[in-house]
Length: 87
Length: 262
Image (tube, chains in turn cyan, yellow):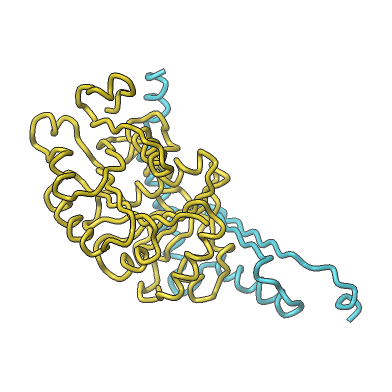
């Protein structure tokens, strides 16, 4: 059991290096406010706010920054309101 | 209503962030609802230690300045459902932390969580005192080393008598203690006279856990530091567990409860 533990945890430094590299790459990209994901997040929220009242509490924004691909997930609860739909 | 804990120290680098993450995860693993808040604005590192650095969307300062809702800034841990993180911003000025803003945020977190653990910056500067102002319990993280003990003494005086205080002795090296090259637990306790919450042995497991971005209590829950943090978490919940000094021969309590700690 101890041997197994030793094997399974032998390499942690490469993980640290990779995590720092990804973080720094994104931070470099963010200088001058060009962090694409952040920009997209703000613009998406603004675009939706133009057309409807967004309840801030019903908006969830999740990001996952990766080495090659980042993902952005915006969940917005849109109330079903017939009056507004007709307008 | 949840309990607010501030994890603090006089001196930097003693293990506040490690301890905040480890205790938070230990409590959450028992099903408690826990949020760990990074108060070290300007020097974020709790998200790194907890492995959430890629998922930070908003931070504490965003919430205080009204740019994001609290629920939007909270990041849920990928491993534990009841563990949340409120990250600090690296790019912002710590003066953005206003007393009223901090009070509002902590007040709201207290309503929603069983434990609010504030990872405070070292010393007695603004960020640290702001976090401390609303805490029910202060955990003073100290290394068995002269400057750390002295700074903790100063910090203790600064914190006043209002809140409950606990001492968490970290980076305790049993080998050096045995050689007589390190302050003894009793010496530290006598100087600080703060009740002891736990003794965390110096260990490679802590570095390994932070490398992979996991609280040490989740990275390897059977490692010596993890066991020490789990015990400390149980003491926080009110259990009266005997404290084993790492590397020391089992005493009276050890015969009954002792486990190999180092």
